[in-house]
Image (tube, rainbow, N blue to C red; front, side, top):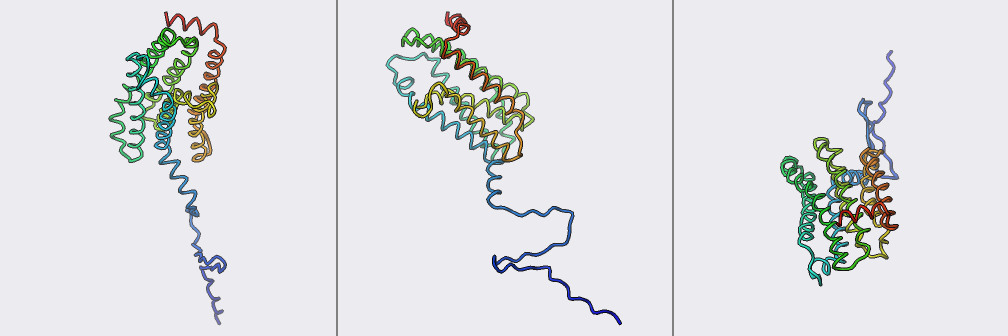
Length: 272
């Protein structure tokens, strides 16, 4: 006589306390994951919106910083500024707008347009250090002769360093333009470097002048944090670039504050 079959166990369990019904699936080779709406939203932000968000944050830093000086130094100056300063302002503003546009194109999946107009950005980026250095020298002469600012020669090391740092990130960004993981981080670093002038114009109570470079590093650290949130590791670009930046910034600020004899000789040679 055949044994009666045991009643099949239900593949559904109910959790009365939670009011949830869970179905048990057959064993499968595919991993089973539980969706977490909160983590999903965070992941979407860090993976899809981060670079566009950073472009807007960089713009906010620049606008806020220069809002404290642009009227008296550029729009309505008591003593007319050299024309080169206005070209410099237009070029750097153009780079910022272009950075926002490129970030938006990637965000909206218009990669072909992003790459096509990218060559315009290459030309603009190549001009930035040339115009930046020329403007630094021109404005240092102007500040010394017209505004009688005795520290203008010592202060010139700051924009000079910014141009060196920008170039050091921009050149490999173009070389690795087809390696997006390198390219986008290097372009972000190069753009963050340009915010130094904005951070330097923040009110002293908000950011003391001697440590204004901390603002630049903070922006880049957001990229480090993004990597850690997404991958639980930091991309080598950030590890090498941020370390080199901090060392360079420390040397520059020391030379500026203490009026390093080495730098002062270089500055006087440049100023003529």
